[in-house]
Image 1 (tube, rainbow, N blue to C red):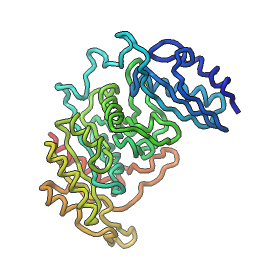
Image 2 (cartoon, rainbow, N blue to C red):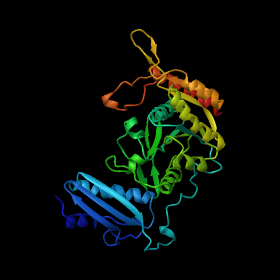
Image 3 (tube, helix red, strand yellow):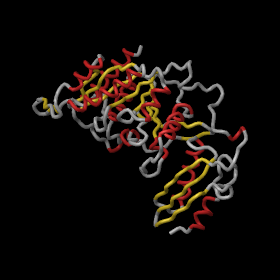
Length: 350
């Protein structure tokens, strides 16, 4: 088992990104806890929620795991006891690099929303993004469900984004560029943050990530109408939305709140995706409406928007050599449903 002295020695090789001294010499380490196989650290930085913090986080985890630590817990807080010069302020976008949020951006933003959890919103986000890419579009996907991030796992993504200078480069899979809070936490740790911190991280996903030229950015929103959804509505005044529900009457009733919120904040609702619409027997072809029927249709009528598609219950074919547990092949019957929805989305956003 590592001692506190050994951990301090290991961290002595890692520099504070703003003070250019080791995190030990700069006084950045605020707390240190050691248990069998686990090291917990709290660090103070001049600026938090930045690419520099993320790069520092990865360096610390790598050094400690190379020394035999099984699990690393990291927390960061903003230091008020130091000042940095102009070159050490929070990372700003490189001159000449177009921002997704600039007035000249031609990228279409589409938020995937739901009234409640458990309706398959993230599954719809992932497969709609992949379907758009299969139709030749340049697509980014932001896992904005910061408390319940799941997109990298659903897409079978194992690697993490690369950080070069003050820019983060998203991970690409199935032709979709992906960024998620999951990349910046250790061992599926919970995110215990207040609303303003979430909003800042979300803004970093827009402004500090090197997205390149994109046709679409999809945002997998948290369920409901909480802080992150409100932040998205403020950051992206021209964002469009797809509302996901199941056929169940209560799920559709709750989803109406998300749709109403979008309409009240002048966001265009492209339509409704009804997920888990029915189960179809491969043997007989008979459909069973396990969760009721027509909830999505009624919701579409209430919001006066189209029903984009009805996705049946199913599971993708699992390929152990190309593992992606939630992505349907293009030729899979459910994959074809997503292609049709993507075609409709493209038509409605021309």
